Image 1: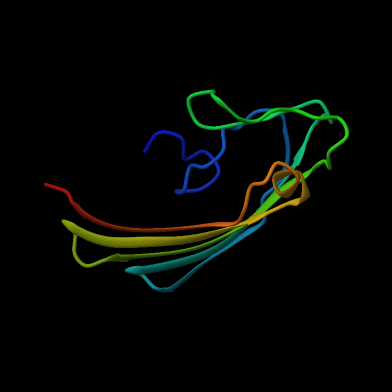
Image 2 (image 1 turned 90 degrees about the vertical axis):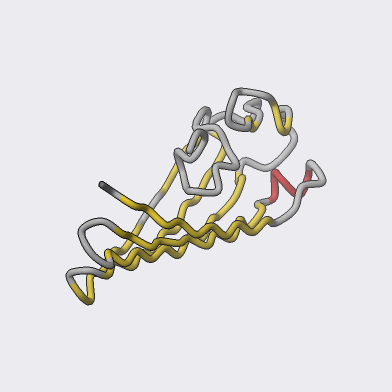
Length: 119
């Protein structure tokens, strides 16, 4: 999926960010994986803008606006049913930071489900 550098939601292009990305992955069963990720972004420089995948500007840089961009919480699960079939899904909530609010942006949600068949 193009644009999913930070998460499956693929909302932001990975440039001009300070990024903190702690995560936890557990395998309660050999066929089941669950993960929790927290992605936190700040603008590297106060003049930096925010870009979408593909490079178009979402919000222009403004040195008078805040450095903090967002927190994204991601929950993911995958179940390997057999050697051919895998079900997986992800939920992301994008908590808009002060910079995004100053640009009249807001929070966002993303949900995806996949069925993968390998032959």
